[in-house]
Amino acid sequence: MKAPFSKILLGLCLVSSTWVSAQETVVDNKETIGENHQSEQHKILFAAVKATEMDAILDNAGPFTVFAPSDAAFERFSKGRIEELMNSQDKSALKSLLGYHIVAGHLTASRILRAMCKGNGKASFTTIQGKKLVAHLDGYDIVLTDPVGNTARITTADVSQGNRVIHEIDSVIVPTHAWGSLP
Image (cartoon, rainbow, N blue to C red; front, side, top):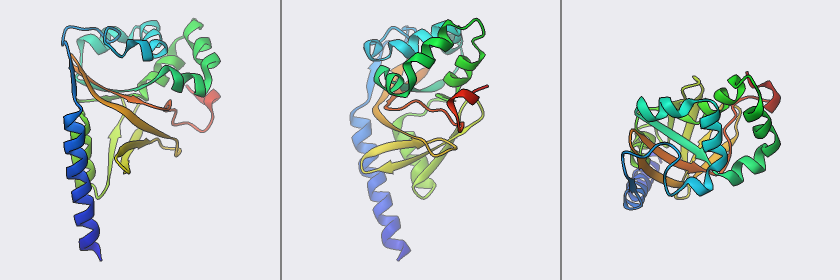
């Protein structure tokens, strides 16, 4: 019974990696974190990155993988709370929230899929905050699950930007039980 499941999983991984590789987008390597064609969909994220001065780190260090919530994802989650964090004198909570969306290394969708194939359908990645994100497939989509079970679906994969690869996600990742308990 295990052999057919393994063959199906391997087949899905191969089909998905081919599908994702065909969708890769390359953006000029000299762009900063907020200067790409996706900027219109990520104004809240880019404003938060700039407010925490993490743009300098993301532009000059790395490589990094950024799981970028769209503006719609931030608004569904709590636009008022994000604005409160950005306007706060102490940016540590905002910096912590952003850190849940960044993984050290250059993880293209095909690399994530290969890791899932090696991990029997799942792959785990550690954010710069030290929290684990687990990736798995749901149909043709890569879905990330945080430590408390919240999920985020990659909606646009592999936007290469200098030392970063950016994947747009449909939800904000907050691996804590309560939004107010962010450090």
